[in-house]
Image (cartoon, rainbow, N blue to C red; front, side, top):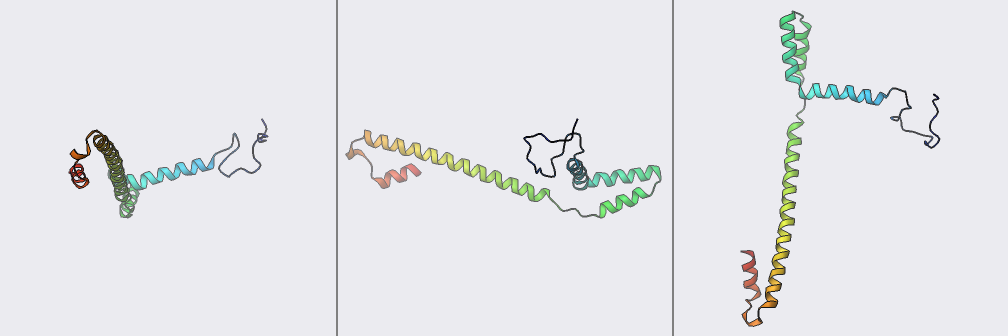
Length: 137
């Protein structure tokens, strides 16, 4: 096997595209970052509890120190703003669905009123003001 690129490959490739058989460093770095992010944000309390139990049963006091240091780190609250954003987006989506449904209902009501106006003689038609109030009530 040779390390030559395919003839159709552009001469300049981004850093994140690796040759076949080489190690994908970006994938490894992002995997490590993901592990630390999940452990740091989502499981802080559980890790502190596990470290406390390990140090209690093994008498290795470095676990107490690690648990206390981890408990003292004040991580930012990402879930509350994200849940508020999600709730707002849901409200906007419901409002747009209602608006499009109301517009469709209004269009069908206008078509029905136009068909009724064509069917009734002019002397029997109510005034525009009465018809407007009647359609909105």
